[in-house]
Amino acid sequence: MDLGFTLFELAAIFATMVVAYIIFGLTGFGSALIASPVLALFIPVAKIVPLLAIVDMFAAVTNVARHSRNADLGELKRLIPMMIIGSLIGATILLKTRPDILLLALGIFVILYALYSLSRRKPLGKFKTAAAVPFGLVGGVFSALFGSGGFIYAIYLSGRIESKDNLRITQTTLIGLSTFTRVILFTLAGVYMDLSILLMVLLLAPGMLAGLTLANRISLGINREQLIKLINILLLLSGLVLLGRYFSQ
Image (cartoon, rainbow, N blue to C red):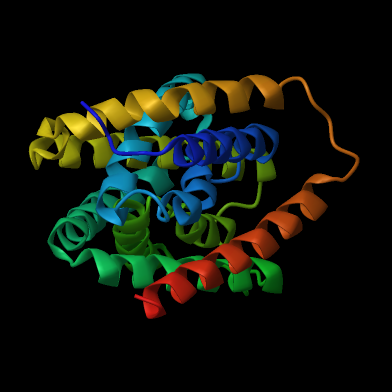
């Protein structure tokens, strides 16, 4: 099946996946959030999240198997039911909304995320357990709609868990479970019955593998905080490009 990409577009898609997974390998930063703004220039937004959900699932299998035993099970039990409900809502919106509106929403989401991250705001005090309801719901919606709800969970968990190692492991496990949830929901909705999506998964996979391989072999002259700041600046610019594309249609 011809997916209709030019050689330039194929090269751009491959390069995007390589860069996204190099950054993911170096920082643990959300690959979907990095890749989505660029992929949206070539692929409908409604297809990007199901695509990246399958690609991310392979990494998630390893992370969940390795770390889940040391995660905070109490927090997971509070967040997961709300995450599933939120994911149902987000998947419904994704599959029912017009493509141009999704493009606008993705642009706004990326810009707001970048601005939030650059502000370096942290939770004030300790969240109550009841806060798991709104954070779980919103995180689930963003995960299914944009493939990137991890920062919502991070805000909640950082206001609940003091140990950095326990926070990281719980966050990793939750994101892995979120990925599984998205794949299951999209499967039940029949999204993967579209052969072009499965073919695009095969198209994206080599870039993902190359990125993770390179991440294990390179070292940067800047620290993690500086790298994440640079990434957020690039995300801000990507979001502005998406808005420019929407308003120029």
